[in-house]
Image (cartoon, rainbow over all chains, first blue to last red; front, side, top):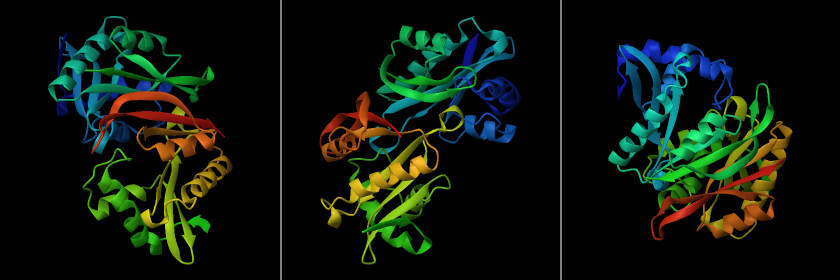
Length: 160
Length: 160
């Protein structure tokens, strides 16, 4: 598996990976019924640097890296990661997060923040903790989960 | 003082109030050198409901109300408030925040969250606490203050 910058030829595979995650609505605080053009416009926003994890020509996951805020907050990075459902459990998310930490350091960011990690997404919470992120805030019932109802979200943060 | 919806005729006064606050770069994690058109585009974003505090035809402050996130996070509101420098200390921010809490309730939001309250902005922190907000997270050195250097920011939250 290699992790490389996304290019235009990757768009259909990126869309195929991101769409079911957003539609499920369990992990991203983003509209669940976005049309394909809006999903691509969001994932490939001008301020997003986008990477893909690729194995033998197949894209297993994708992530974006951006500044979490502008002005006085521009030294803190933010990322979003999605792994293809067929590639779960193979360490794709871990590899992408490690890559993003290195890339963020390279770009001069001093820290990375996740704004809204849904507490029921236990696999992600544990992975980010294993990769050095701390829960620095709990947003009470800030996420409406399609099956669990109102659940807490975490703000997670680590220095670089 | 009344608080009312902003209209097109208010734009130049809104710009005159917001511009020095963003240029000072002490409280908003937003670029400090935005041109006027970008400041207005930001403050009057399509997703923002904008209000002004007015006294005898003069606008003393302005705020926007929006959903902090989409999808599963759309039930949490977010606001930004700016008081004209000449009107500091007259309770304008308190009146705007109280108005925004009522308006957010009216629109069906269940909570309000401030994502990035700079810790050195002690007057704001104390006011939000007095109005029922709790510090639910501390973002270590997440804000680069023009005179104090890297300082913490708070995530503040209250139910409605």
